[in-house]
Length: 255
Image 1 (cartoon, rainbow, N blue to C red):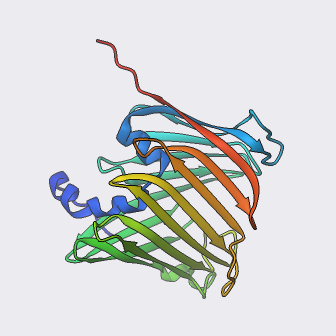
Image 2 (spheres, rainbow, N blue to C red):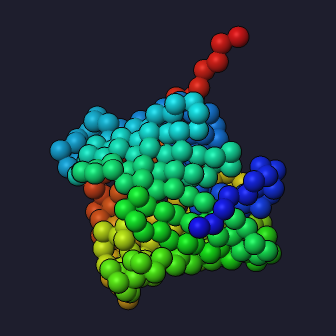
């Protein structure tokens, strides 16, 4: 089992690069920008039984770096995310028909960061992040040996691409035979667009079969002037299924 760094200052320096995985991520941004709550309301289309004007998704902060998400669609589920001082997960609770709890531990060794993600169902993945020129270039997951009998073809690999100004431009993640996967094969290509250093748009394309040119699902997230999501659009083979508006409420303080 990997151990957490004992010195918080050293952790800030050595693990901060992992924030690249949270770019445009609503719960992470809620913690960073001190947002109390976020509601996602359908503007167009349908999602399961939900229609225009219904709340599809909402996030609530408890003020102590813990965000609770309630998603009201195909399978009603509740996620509770705990963040450390860097805005990285230290725990993620996922509840659908049952509760699954993920714990995270991290350590940096030279030009690599190792992150262990452990499920209360008895499996864990050790991710190795490879660092080149001060940026994360790739991430490769290794499933613990005890689960290889159930997932013999396991694969979890991500590559990262950057601009000349070191802004993240694209990530490509491929998973096969994954214990969390809804599909045997899943490829996710995510493209990031910026205005100077403010994130403007994130486009995600999903493929569920290898060697397929057109994605089965495409999502677009548009950001406000400070890089917080304001609109979400989901398309299936170029047909818009649902469009939502994202409304945030900032934390208020009394004098």
